[in-house]
Every structure is written in C-alpha cells, then in structure tokens.
Image (cartoon, rainbow, N blue to C red):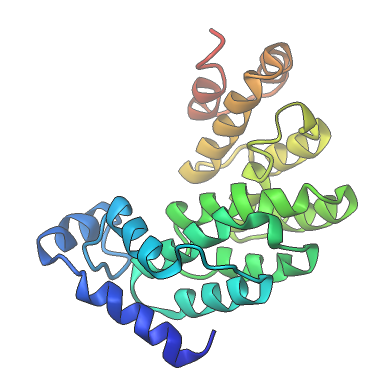
Length: 222
C-alpha cells in the first residue's frame, strides 16, 4: 500500500472522530495512546466500507499493517489487527520477525494479546520447530510483552497444545510480581483446563504459582 492511499484511509478515521468518547478511551488505557473516540463496532463499519469484497494479498496485508502501526492513532493499530486476524491464514513463518516487532512497538495488552493469539499463534502452528525456536527466545527475553506472547500463543490450540512448551514458558515467567505475566499464566492454564482439566490440576499442585495465576487457572474446575 502506498503512503497516499493509507493517508486517505487514515483521514477517513479522523473524519469519524468523536471527541465525546476520546477522554474515556484515553483514561481506560491510562493515557498511553492517542485516540479518535471510535468504538470497535464503529471501526469495523469504516473498514467494511473501505475493504468490502477486497481481495488482500499477503504483501498488501503486511504493508497496511506497517502503515497502521506507524500511525499515532490507536484505532489504526486496531484496524491493522482486524485485517490481520481476518486474513491470518495468508501469513507465513517468515513473517514472524515482523510480528515480533509489532509486539514490542506501542505495546500494551490490547494489541499484544491479539497478536499473540491470532497472527502469531496461527502462523507458528504450521511448524513445531520454528515455534519452539521463537517461543524459547521470547520466554527468555527481558521484554515483558514477548514473554506474555510466549505464554499465550497456544491459547486456542486445545488438544494440539504442546504441554512441554507451555510449561517452559510458564516456569520462565513464574515467581514474578508482574501482573501481566501472572495473569497470562492463569489464562493459558484456565483455557487448557477446558481440554485437559486433570493436567491443569496436577500442574497447580506441582508448582508454587502466584495467587492470581492459581485462581485464574482453576476457575473452571474447582
């Protein structure tokens, strides 16, 4: 996507700005991002008007995402995620470094979790060796959001979840007082308890988890 084409899209978002909602959205995200005051349903209407029936190529998705991520407006970051998640089957393993850069830019739970579960999780599902390589790197990183991504990328894998890899990512993050890591630990275990509750119970018995992680992990089975 060329710069002028993206600017036209960004201008459409700016035209739909709602000042009455900006402060509430800004406060909810603790002032970390610049908002236009466009809600999720409103954003999806705008995107449908622009892209209804559009046949995306992988290269166009990557270009659109890159332009959106360079915008100062949070709604454009969300717009990129909308398109990435809708067309996640188009991505290849060679796109993982780009996804990694997205995780570490404009980082907060709202974008990181979507990246982890959809384009990253679905792309890494294609190859177990690449998955272990990248996830090991992230689990050992000092970057909070890469560590959270390592934990959460298997969130929707169900019976295909790699228990050894999940344990590795959890134990690398366990023992911290960091809310976003402890929450992620509980979240992945809770989700996996839908598939293998006995395993999750045993895991919680074998490991000294934070109160938050344990509470979240056992929510559906105790």
